[in-house]
Picture 1 (cartoon, helix red, strand yellow):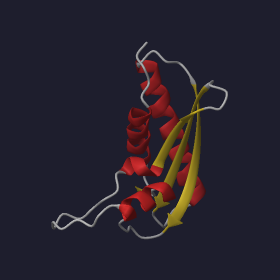
Picture 2: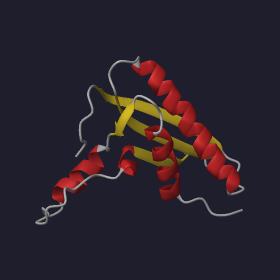
Picture 3: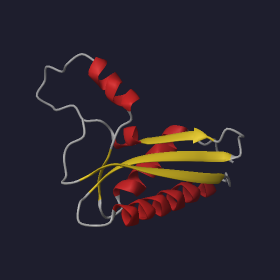
Picture 4: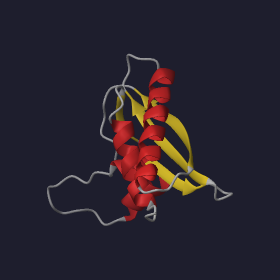
Length: 125
């Protein structure tokens, strides 16, 4: 069994969420936004972008029985938010479970999806 790295789970979950039709982006948590605001401004012409993983949180369950994944999504208008959120939940759960199984770590996974905004595509800073 290979050790499970939370950062790898973040990438797996972010990729699965972003591949879901109707998801336009992942919204970073406040801690990521505050950290980005506290860093010195960049003098080059490359715009600063928050990584998609900033919109995902992966923690061990309090009782140590598995993983809890939180995904914060920005959705496209035109479809029911509930339907998209369910799709995100199912895709993220399947991707994380598959990743864990490939590592030989069969563990329980819970996924929480929070819709932070519905509307036209915008850059999330």
